[in-house]
Length: 263
Ligand SMILES: [Fe+2]
Image (cartoon, rainbow, N blue to C red):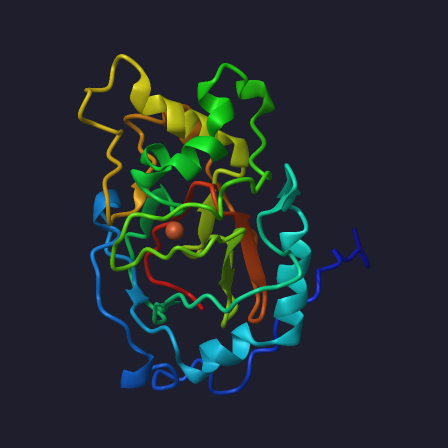
């Protein structure tokens, strides 16, 4: 329809000139160790172990980014049973890596997975309490937005694991990327964690197999064990430089493959 416009939400940050320069993040002080975190989903994503570059730090410390994160934190129930499990008004900088694909690149993407933990989700007392509704016959009352016990227990160690409780995970775009150019996909159902946690306990899974979950690697969601969930895998819309996208920490996500990358 002529004249019709779709209102876009404001961008999360203003991207500074020079942030996308190939040399911008590439300082030895910014780098962490390489890892095999994504080995369990059979992908080698274009992710670089760069955590502390000036552009990353400037984006993380943007006031607008802090406002977005404070709003997102309030989506959780942070207080229950007389305990404040976390303070939604207080955030910490969480260092994560950089994804970079040059113009014209081919990429196999990154298989569906989730990141809140691995075997510790079943094995630690804190997570057993957090997920108690899934195992005590009251599954209808499971609330993926209830933070109770999520900040109370340890995570199993690994080179890429972190004990910080991440209410959401996020991506910040440093360039314009169309929706068909290898962008983020999610299964936008936080409650799906219930299915993922119970699935290895069903009769068709061997006693020593947790549907592929193991320590120090990402938690895979697979066509073999979770085909119904993967039917809901959906891509994000076009993003422009400075947009950020956020998803509940328990959500399955992946990166679509792309050939001859544009943008
Ligand atoms: Fe991930």
